[in-house]
Image (cartoon, rainbow, N blue to C red; front, side):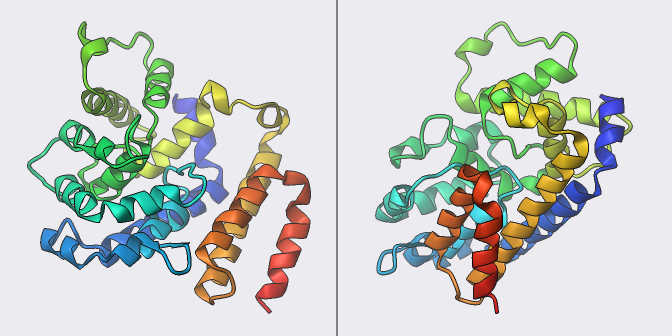
Length: 281
């Protein structure tokens, strides 16, 4: 792992992208100071979740899904998830109180009643990102939201990972807390990664040990230089979309659509950038 970490450290494009994302995460926390002042959760408005009149994502989830995209991206399609959260707004606020409760463990926060809101159950990826963003300073949690990915990383950075005999019967939250703890132990034992900020370390894991479903044909045939260029192009594209949205040139839904076009149609990326660049003039 040390050799992989040393090689990863040389990728300045990723370091810049992650530094910018961490700075945005801190701004998000300033905008929503729920940890420092839990009562401020009551200032959250349904419009912060979803704007029904314009069918746009509200500011709260716009930050989580777009501005904080490099810190564990969420794959969401359509606006139904936001509509549902807005329709159960009081239940969602109650869950936020659990998220920022310093007396509750990571397991308790993940195992809270997220599944009472449609689309927030299952492996609870959305819940885990919210939990990470409001608990990142504890340094006890990684922005890795798939349980299978944490298991994969642990298997790759520990020669013979040992699981408790009752692992199979643990709750989702208990597994998540255990896996986070074991992976972070390795981070702190490795002299090369000890001082790394946790989002940067999580990005390293995805780059150095890509889960099987991420190991596509395109990724396997790209050399290191091409990968760096592709990462920088994506960072520049997100920056362009963010600037257009800030200026009111595109809506939140258009932001999402263009991001999906970028991901689904790599052959049309130049034309897409050129078209959007015209809007910024």
